[in-house]
Image 1: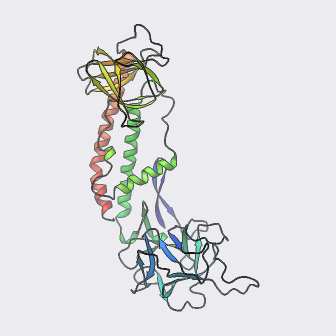
Image 2: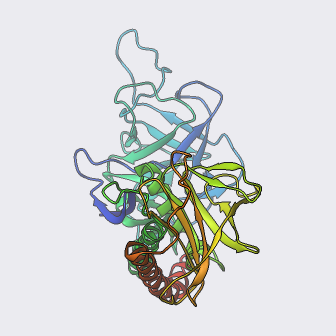
Image 3: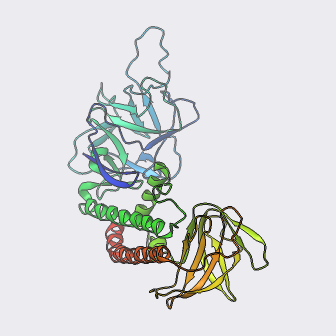
Length: 414
């Protein structure tokens, strides 16, 4: 069975598939490089393996005389079985799913049982039919095989796809059922018995990181954002890419996951819709939807720095009024309150309960005497944010505690 990390949506799963199954997908991992449009008999090509980032060549060793070179070498060619069909050009392109013999530099590559290394051998004579066991797959069956795209290379006798891999003995080639894939790299599972366990821990860590990000979204959600509408999530493909990058970062020392090693400041707010506020000069300024870091500035001003748009842009300065809450809070906090339906109010509160508020308007029309007290609803919003922040800190500590262990285990397989 072949183990591959499938990074889809909100979870990572170990996906098991049999390469011998009738409709199972073969692992891709090869590119045929050459000067023809299609792969043709009696033409010279270079066979690039994407896992190894190198070209296959002849190298004297026990078992299959195969090795790698970093440069294109024109050592590959293919040959089909004798073609007796009337009117057929024997040099026509090899088709997807058509058996052929594979030649690398000096010898034909043939499936053969070995006591060490992969079950392949190389021979100067291809024999009657033994060599004609290779097919290109993961392509529309019957099409002429093009030069250049990434292909799967299957051996009919092995009933499996040939892939590049890291192994402790022999040339770095494996049958796909024997490998574990981490990110874009293959490892022979039998040579790295602890890898599956390390991957499992890595999955748990990435899940924890994604949960933290969800908490950050919840923490910065303002009361002007309807609670019955979920935050917009990235497309599944973008989530998959992010999760794969996070897992691969665990294998790169020394610093990983720096964006989750500290809780996001609780002075970050989110506005779900545009709101009008007043600058110290008395002019109107429209604050667009997004996330903002809030800073109190003397005298009686609030700075809003956008975390959604260009962070190099200067912060927007709003005029604010001093407030004093009846309760104290554990840390400096900022939030958005709605004392009336049209008055989004940005609050900055110090631990002693003192702070500033900037009263805005969705319509641009402001009442002459805006409400300037943090009522019961306002205090409930502050407490919700404080609780979310506390839980985030606890989760991040758990992530940090396990990160070193997971990273240490995965780096043994680099």
